[in-house]
Image 1 (cartoon, protein in one colour):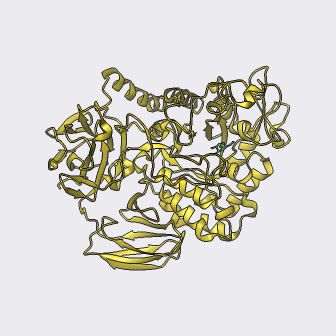
Image 2 (cartoon, rainbow, N blue to C red):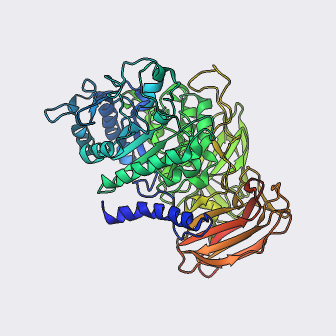
Image 3 (tube, rainbow, N blue to C red):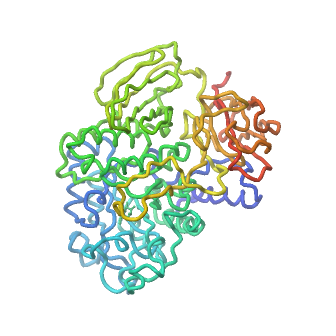
Length: 633
Ligand code: GLA
């Protein structure tokens, strides 16, 4: 393995070791610890077989969509990963443990040399595309657990049907990447979820039991360390077998095991919820599972609310408003843009939507800032995304049933209210201007998206909350993960309305937020409100990448929403591991204390809020107006 790559990954391990060695996770690490070893500087774009075909896949279907991606010009716009999801494996050969591809479905895989995807990946690479494959953390996959019939499933003995990574990590990763030439792997989690000794299929002798360590309904019933340990092993194998570093690891544990706090440290993508379906309300659930996690996504480690379902159901050619919304929202979230429809027959109007270069550019913006919520209500959301050029993007999303005349203000955009703001509508391409505020009509289920040019409120710097891509909650203070109650709970899941409904289950409540407390309030310290800032629980450490700014300033204190009125919190700013500034111990109700640190030459800033009080959950703190200022300001 190239030394550089090894260092990159071991660097992360070393961070953990340092914290573990000192026993103090709040000690400065002087490094950026979020995942950055895969090829995901911007969110990956492409196509996946799952939403289009389920397990009923074959070479013609996959290559047909790949060809359309090239012919339609979508490849030139960035769609390049062609991913085979579940359903490609027929068995694990018992003589040597090698996986065998379904020969009837992938005819190019059979030759005298044995079963191989190399001819298939060669074809994709020759088309200028990349190739993705699917596996599972356990011995068996999701379709083996959940498919209603066995038509497309692996065949043979119990051992032959064990096509997942468990017990074969190094061998399979070598096969996929070194031998077969794949560039992307999605690792699903059903093997660690659905094969307990009591599951009917295990009891019937169809599969070997594997004690479940992932439980979607309960963080407490999940074994977080066990899941992390396997992803660590997979990463080590990926580094060993990818000398060119051209790989992506997509974690698929659906928001279970509190993965929304740590997925960013283990993979290029991390699913934040269970599967999307082509239903409007299910799209809302998946959107909500990622939209308040803006600080947990960065270049190299993105939130994944699942693949696009444009082309089916509520997002088909008869629902262009919904399809545009789905696409706009995924772009603003920096979600992977993975098409999930049979492109050979996709209607031109839908091809136009997913080919909107202006919307794609928001998703692929090199600054890598997920949009933040400037306005947050159950029926209307205003999302603002800071772009690399200094411009911004704004999306106004009407989730409800009636048209809304939305007020968009310069404050929402952190732009000066006395200077002209220019809006370019990225769907209609119309330009307009306003000063202070404007009204915009948004139809039911519509998302209006604009590129915005104006004069920044903070003329000589940037608020930390404007650049979430450079802020990593390495320790967010959450010690007892709780389900996020603000995620829309759709009735359009896999089991229809059987059972008791999907109760709040995706942990994440209490995580660090931009311009919000961890529990969704606006930021206040000692009675003073802050429109900009970072809200986080006490006993937290935020890493901030400094791209040449000269000074960090903030007004810090215990947030007024804290229920603990006695616990004292000390705020510290570190630069490359050295203490630069420290507050006095601050309690609820006290006025904010201004902190400032000189960042000359500093690459990694760390913001630590430390308390001796026992209960972080009751102690949200605010880094009010936290900002990086240009040298000389
Ligand atoms: C899980 C995943 C899906 C898909 C299927 C395949 O449900 O979440 O995205 O990969 O498995 O069986």
